[in-house]
Length: 124
Image (cartoon, rainbow, N blue to C red; front, side, top):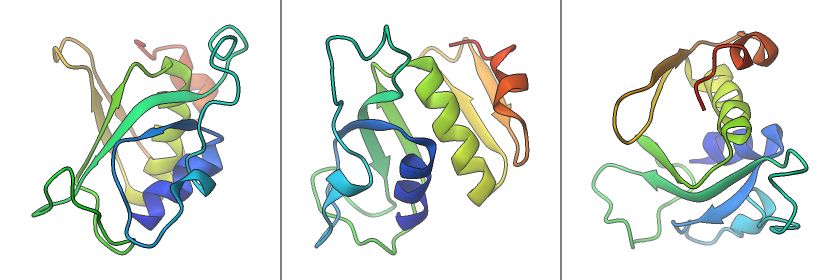
């Protein structure tokens, strides 16, 4: 959990957490959107509503900072925010498989890949 939150912060992303971390202020690592009215037009890195899955934990239960995140979901994110977050996450965890709800678009991001190069092929 700590690595995921750190990656969001490092990438400069913001969003609305749909999860709780026991004893931790999430606004430090995942702040809310500073200006929702102009965020998208200004190239803001809004992840939208962010869900994190942890094995054995119901979505409403607070998780511990040391628990392992098994999946990440975004609702209404900007494509550039997801790319920034995934690049930061891959540098910590290894290759990541990224896909949309329909499974129509599937993309793999590996550690060390340049965001500018990925952006030329990024489907979102």
